Image (cartoon, helix red, strand yellow):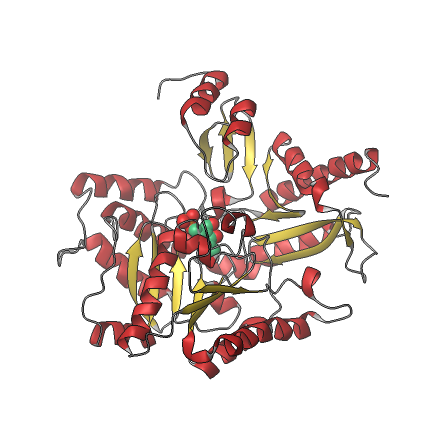
Length: 464
Ligand SMILES: Cc1ncc(COP(=O)(O)O)c(C=O)c1O
């Protein structure tokens, strides 16, 4: 790349590049931030400013930036065989080896994988696969997939339909037919006054049973959920929730799908989030952390119950992508998973970094602006509230239109920290290679940005 000034990059960007989830005109006016390089957990922008990336890119750079093993694996594979497809009864050694390794790190019932290019494509595959499964079993009327409001499952037609984001449904006539939603297990907003988290977990799970009964169990194909809702605001469900969801699905014979696109590959302190929350899904969607985001790859792990039917009775499955099992992506994934193992990152998150972050968040929870604090492994959320003591002791939220979260996010950017705002929930998911000292630095930056936000809130009289 020929070097240019920030203004030159921004002008060319505004002239030609339509960014995802962006108001094109507003960004063109403001100018995007241009990121030029990265190392470990840090990014540098075109002005040379160093930024601590507490979001691992987009929840994906689990092994951190600049890992030579991944770079070497890509280079080797590019030289040897940059592409071949898996359509016409062919395979490549990289894809075969990765399938084998994924079966090894997944819970034991997962011995098969279907590859694609992203999390969204993975969830499109889920929709086609669960409906195909019931067709093969002679129950084609089982079409409906139940998901949750405020879920995020991607941005393709099926992914956005499975997701429960009202802003996405408002554009393009979504959801597509046969996808319905129940409410989310968000204790802070949804639990009746005085209800414990565990009691609420059971209540929230009962909404699934009520929906199944309203539709008729014979028409329901599957339930899908993220073990922890990520893009929805790092909403960690009560521990009673998922085992009860499992019991309900089992009782009605319904397939259970765990969207592990964020929670897979160590983020929660186990290889997959379903292991942290003690449930056994039939399918797991994955992407992001499988290659630490170095190159696009996604897929669906297929459990025994479905694999047996699809393989032994299914005939041809008319579905797939040019890049299903792309050899370069698979080679990078192999190097990435081996590195995660070598560095013991899953165990480190479970035994050391997760508890260390939880402790640091406990300290931050004393800040006057912070209400609910949640973390699990290396995912965390701080809810900014107007009055900590209000609202049944949970804290009184700010009116949404004040956009206090965005105010805080602005301070984070200005102070060299990437932290995302989902409404007034400030969320993080740092690389799994982060050290204690770096967590301390991150927490110090968060505290400074909370102070700056509080000063703004007071100056504007929003605390009254
Ligand atoms: C849980 C979940 N599922 C699916 C996706 C979609 O993945 P992709 O953006 O790779 O299509 C995301 C993306 O953030 C996600 O968080």
